Image 1: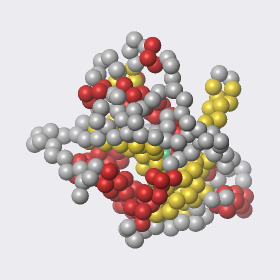
Image 2: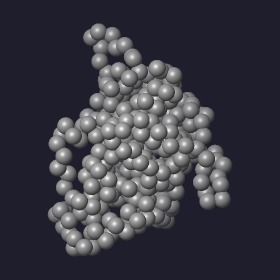
Image 3: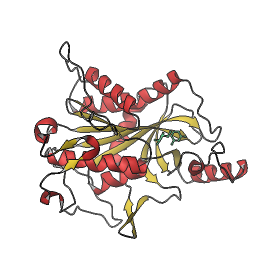
Image 4: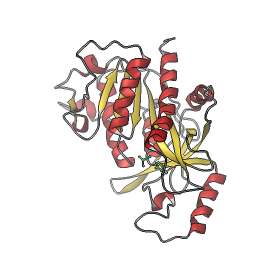
Length: 310
Ligand code: R2B
Ligand code: URA
């Protein structure tokens, strides 16, 4: 399958069925989604997942379990007495996967390699299940630049540690570059929803995605460091001047893979530290929960609106 591209190589994300740009998948006798503990032969994926419209990814398994319980309330779903939500991927202890009506809540772990594996398998799951009109969200945490911690950042472009807007993957001994464009309309709709709550700010900007939390994000507090405070601040100011509002570790992969699949997607992260002020994350557990809840509420409102739930 080839998607419509503009002159910059940008694919317009679209509604409709999930299309896999891999001619080999349909030749497989069985497709084992190993890290999710699912298979298109052993499980009736269309029956289990055919109604999915929203997939929400987040780093931590606990947080995505909490998000699933939160969505039960938000979507007014009745769980019968004695029943509970269960982790569909419990047979693999790599990721968690919960389904709440048309919403999937999936953990992706930390960093691009972990995100990449679960993204491949979730996209294939959606394909085998014949899902249509699906939207993808990453709900995350990040380090902000010049923003009050707790600010929500919606990513309009993901860049790597060299400010390049694509994910580079070594494939068959070549470096292939996958552009990490995101859907502008979705960004603006989410920002409008976030801005309705004036107790914090919701902003749109670039997100830098790094391969490391410490030196990769110009931190001075890792086990190793070869640069000075001045070097660190000069770098952070330089990327801030180029439009980077926050730094995290999965946006480039998420955006590049969603773009390649032509699926509408958005990245919404709270900031949990202002990196121009500090390297260490010292907010209390309650604070961190409260900040992460902001992203969950914004995405929940978006989903309710699109399901016509008052
Ligand atoms: C944000 O938080 C994690 C690092 O603490 C990482 O997964 C990310 O992107
Ligand atoms: N996640 C990151 O990757 N960096 C931060 O500074 C905070 C959360």
